[in-house]
Amino acid sequence: MDADGILFNGLVYAMDKPTTATPSAIVNKMIEQRNNFLRMYTGWGSPLTTSLTSPMPSTLQTKITQILTLCKQNNFPAILSIADQHGNFASAYPDEEQLNINGDHVFGYPGGTFICPSGEKYRQYTQSLIRQYITLCLNVGITPWIGVDEFVYIGQGNDHSFYSQSMKAKYLAQTGLQAPNVQGSRSTWSTSQRNFIDFCALQMQEFFREMEEEIHENDPKAIFGVMIDAYWVYDDAVYWSQPWDYYRTVGNLTFERFDSNYQSESAAKAGMQRIIDLNPKASHHFIYGRATSTGRKLAEWAKEMKYESVQLYEYYNVRDSTFDISDITGTPAGVFWCPYCSLPFTSQSELNAHIATNHVGSQPHILTVKSLPISNIPFTVTKI
Image (tube, rainbow, N blue to C red; front, side, top):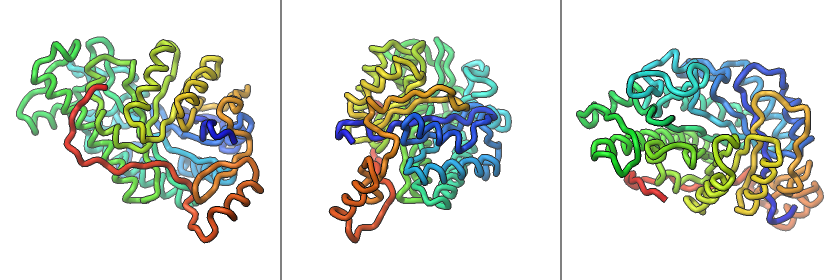
């Protein structure tokens, strides 16, 4: 494989809606498109229950187990993407739904309702989902890889979603103050407005840290990552409500340019580079949302910037056509991963020779991806 090639040429399979795409159809499409990495997205309208202890129903567990088994057979790493959008959860626990200052629903309601990271029930719910997925991975014999994705407070104009009942109650309990209305640029905010946005960022940081700890308590070798979902898309209030200092401690960072309507190409490229600059020691991953010439261009940029994966978002069905960018990523149809150091090889004979030369007597770990320790430094906001 080209040493400068991208390590993973991924496919994102979204479980948003009922689908006829079987596990074998998904993995066969990956082989056809020369993908070597699968991201399973659970959010929006995915078939999760509202149970705080068992959010993944048995039917979904069965499907994911089948997918993981096929991924293992083909040496494809697989990641479960946990998103902040669950309409069913919001209906069951309305106090933890993100709302605007007037208590109204915001973007995505009802199917893709955003849940507030301040919610204790949602934290318990996500921890349970993590435990269920890790159990499935360990039963199959594949390294658990979990991404906490699309966690953001939505902002559209002056309509922000910081004001869930759980957020307002927690802010009042800890400060004795009512949550203020925040609009406009940071330079115009009062001290109380800045303090509230910092508090919102702290809730997100606590959520990420608790999920990271949950993952590693259940499997110290599991891989954890987050998606940064606020570059070039939202306004100052949303930008500053992100835990930027925490992102500097995470071993895997993902950036997404989902649709050309959201960002200009120059802004997307600048955002991609800023993710690298934010945390140069991390592994960097990029999700693009269209199987088009623009998608190819984005993959080329990601390769130039040394991203370690590009991933095509495919919604919840398998496309009829084939979108093969292996000429860019350098990932052929058959990738043989070293179970000791995670280097990729293009044939079993090359892999066997590598193991005989470098890993006699070593203990396989299936997959190694950089993972930095959890930071215990006090939370501060630093714009880059």
